[in-house]
Every structure is written in structure tokens, then in C-alpha cells.
Image (tube, rainbow, N blue to C red):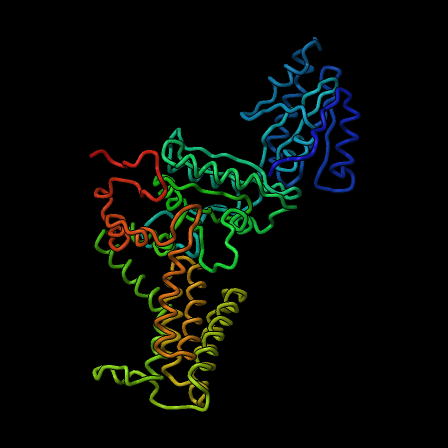
Length: 490
């Protein structure tokens, strides 16, 4: 976020600086911010810190170095240079602004003021609280790495750089939020990513003016892609460093937000949301097989229930060899309402599973399946076929790698069901047509959402349908406009 306030310069009088910082930071009121004062070569030195965000061992080591100066140096002529040389740390910066000093201190760095100097030292001793890298729950693989992104932006950039040891990998950091001052990192490979895309993302981030972004990456997404009421995801989230590194090498740009384990991949199309890392951890044939199984589940999650309802309402449309499709018994509740109640029930169960401790989730599933589902059929609230097809559609939604896409597909399924009830066959056909046309009109950061299907690119579309072996994939996707298209020599 662009800082519009005037910069307050550091005064040579350390007492004036102390008064400013006490008023600004609430030192003496907030227990987690404090100051430590010592005298070095007859000059007062003040160190400001934020408890819980700093590594205390580093601070103690720095204090020992500074206090030992009185024994090794007698001339107070160049105290600032001597202090600078005794700050035994790899990241030491200077600042002339009290506002910058406050911002950096609240980010976990320490700020050191020296009486009579107009500059302060900033030392990076951050040690954010958080968990260690572990495999993400929603992107598990049978074979592959078991580390995943965490809520710590420093760890996340390190996990990415561990996989791409290229000197041209760039991690640009900036802050968003007038009050939260959340760290945002733009990651890209300098000679691969489109400079226009990087500039566009940088410009969109700099234009964000808001108090804070406690919801982190999701708030950033809404500012960048300006999604509005479009239910379909326009960016892809991943918690796997290997997936993020692969997209970086293809020419995508990542947005890493502190306090969230999800990394945002831009730009993306619909087909980025239906691929999974497991496909690339298996042989090409098995990967293609798994991809088509997943495609089948996604397609069924959208079209199966509306089509079954249509055939149930107009059984004359069925060929003789599948004329058994349709409810074998009737109830007093219309099929449309049965489907609606079942869909709502599954969503309630999903929400209950999220808020239920894992030790109780199995018991909850048994209650839902046996006591609720079976008894509802026995008493005549539902016909068995409704439960069957709604369950198949729900499983297809669960097989969708992108949670956001699965929810959007469910919205489309409900709309198709309503159109079938109102207009029968014309409603279904018009609904499917409008669905495809709507997807074809979506653009994400100047990227067509249905590429490479619309506009059609045969080679790229083949790689969507079939998991091509890595040695045969020699160029990067053209949709991200990479500067260097070749991944392998001819």
C-alpha cells in the first residue's frame, strides 16, 4: 500500500525519539513492546523490540557484543561506526525515518537508536510463532514431498527457493494495510515471467487502500481480480511448494501473503483448477488415467443430477436399454424438493464436519448415513435414487482438486435443476449452453478462462486431455506469455 503520511525524521536528541515512540507504540501500556537502555562509550543506546516476534537469543548475543565495546575501545570518536561493526548479524540496515522504524519493529525486527545520531539501526531477528512445514490436508499425494507452506512468509519463500536455486528468482516484498501492515511477496523468475504481468500485479497491490487484511490472501484476490458475483475461482491456491515451483518455471507469478499457508498462483484458467500433483507423481499412462477419472467425477458433479431429473420427468426420452432409470416408487414429496433437501443436507453435513473434532467426525458420519439417510428413505421422505445420484454428484465435487471450483460447480448444478423443473428439455439445453458461453467470456488478468479450448490451441489442449511425459513437454504454456518459451533444448 502506498504510504501517504509524512515521514517523521529521527532526531539527534534520543529523548525526543523516545517520547515519539512511547506515544506511538504505547510503551508502558502494551506489555509486548518495550525498550532496553544501555550506555556504550559514554553514549546512550536504546533498543526497541516486540516480544513474541523476536528471537531473544539473538538479542542477548547482540547486547553482549555492544557491552563489550567499553572494554575494547576507549575513543568515543566514531561510536556509530563501532556499533555498526559490532552488530553481529547478516541483515543490518539504516533508516532516517521514525515511521519506518515503527513499522519494521512491529514486523519483528529490532530498532537501535544512538544518542546524537540521525539514523537508527534495524536488525532482522524475527522469529514468528507458527508450525513446522507439513503435508497439506487437501493436496495429499501417494508419492512425493511431505512438506507444505505454513503461515510464515519467511519459511514459505525459503521452501520455494529450495526448489528453484536460480539467481533470477525474485521475491519482492511490500506491505498492505494501513493498520495490519501485512507482508505481501511477489515471486517470479525474472527472465521467464511476463514483465507486463508482474507490473500489473505490482500496480494492483500498490493501489490497495484498506485498514487491514486479516483474511489475508482472499482479500488480496478480491482486490486484484475484481471478481464481483462470479462464482468461479480466478486464481489457484496451493499449499505445496513443488506445485508452486512448477508454476513459477512455467512463467506464472505467485503472491505469498504472510499469516496464510495458501500461495496464490496467477494467472490461471479453468483447467488449472482440475489438475492435481498426484498425476505428475505417477507414470504418464497412470497420470492420464487418474486425470480422466477426476474429469469424470467433475463432469458428473455438474450434469448428472439435472440429467437424471430430466429423464425421470420425461421417461419417453430414454432409450429402451436404459429405461430403468427413474424412481421405482413415488412419494408425496416432488423429486425436485427431494433433491433440494438432499443437497442442503449434504452441505450441512460438510459444514458440521469442518466444525467437528476429528475424534467425533466418524461417529457423525455414521449417524448421518445410517440414522438419517436410511430412515429418511424408509419413512418415504426420499426415494433411494435421489440419495444415490445426489451422493454421486457430491463425491464428484469432493474429487475436484479446487475447493472453490467444486462449490461453483454446485451452484451451476442447482441452477440447471431449477431450469429443468421449469422448462424441461429446453431449459436443460439452454442452461448448459449459457454455462459454456459464460465461462468463455471470463477473463482473468487478460487471460481467457477456457484457454486452450476457447480460443483453441491443439497442442496445449492435448496436454490438458492427456498427461504428457515431461521429456516431451519442451515449451512453456503460451497463455502466460513467457519471455523464454523453451524448457528444454530441441
